[in-house]
Length: 222
Image (cartoon, rainbow, N blue to C red):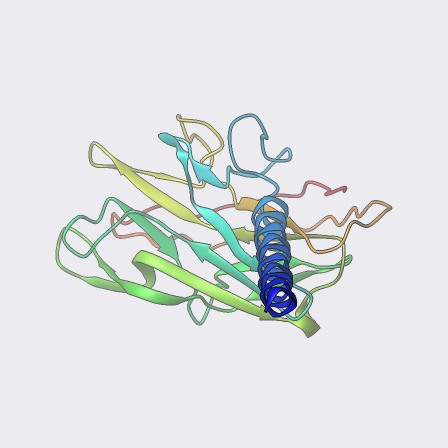
């Protein structure tokens, strides 16, 4: 009787330890991914020269360009602008037939992101709908073939309405020059630098909607 009771206790303890270890590894990996997915998260980690912030400069605790998943098989970028269909205070450019939604740098070449998914079309003050601009959260998932180990960078373009004036591609609260907003994510620590030089342009929308010319010819290094 004694031996059977002790055996059951040992089995219970062994199962409990296994569960604790499994949970610890699971949460360790989740924490590692959360920390490692986003390189630029606050004013303490400013963007590289020539690019806009990955967070909302008017609400610095809000991360706009958020890599919510980063693994060697899939990467998901979420742009969590706070705009809603009834309160279009923030919008994201999602691409159209003449302009890409953004760009991704994996290796040494910028590749166009043709479009993002999600959100609802933005309507200007006259009621005209602009499908290339979306309010609400938009996302883009990249497959393993589109990314590499080491540092990768992604560009997107978000505008915020401040007292009736659109502020786009901000690198500070003046938003004097619209810039592609930059986020980086590290899949596996790599070495060496990457210095692509690329001019990136979004064609202006016009008709009183957000001005969207955005250029950068800055190099990127790890």
